[in-house]
Image 1 (cartoon, rainbow, N blue to C red):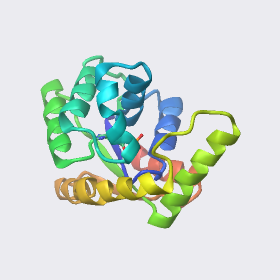
Image 2 (cartoon, rainbow, N blue to C red):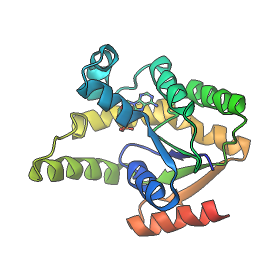
Image 3 (cartoon, rainbow, N blue to C red):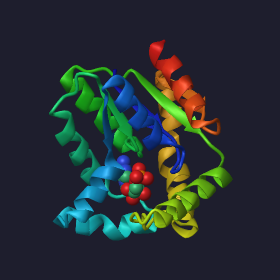
Length: 192
Ligand code: AMP
């Protein structure tokens, strides 16, 4: 199965994707993780996107589509989980074309719904917890960058909800529920 986890920053996409990797042997493709990796390894592309990411804006479609296209080539027996991609309509179209070329289906798009106040609280807590644990704190996990990240979500990414709804691919889950409850709702959808 190939699935998209769609939702605003802090909705729990990464957490749920990791559970699916552990439980179903799916492959998580997180463009956020790929971009952070490029930054920490100091590649030219990593340097180019650093400022945009820290601010909370989206990096260019060209860069993220390139990253995804590269990873798709390897294939995944258990299927792919697209986490944080696509984030624009152009990315959604590109993904559709890439999957078509591979003869692979997009099985379902799962939207995680969480209200804004909770999202801000979650990322601020994530930063506090990382700091307390002596782990690196994401430069965009603060209230200021969250304003930009949420604006980017509503302006550029939320139109995908209508897009996938119209295609008949969208399912929505209450992302405010406890983590295990969210996982159970996702499992229900995947088990059809
Ligand atoms: P995430 O880890 O998914 O929250 O992504 C962190 C940051 O990476 C975002 O705020 C963007 O700056 C960038 N990013 C990740 N995925 C994408 C994408 N699909 N399109 C554009 N920018 C992205």
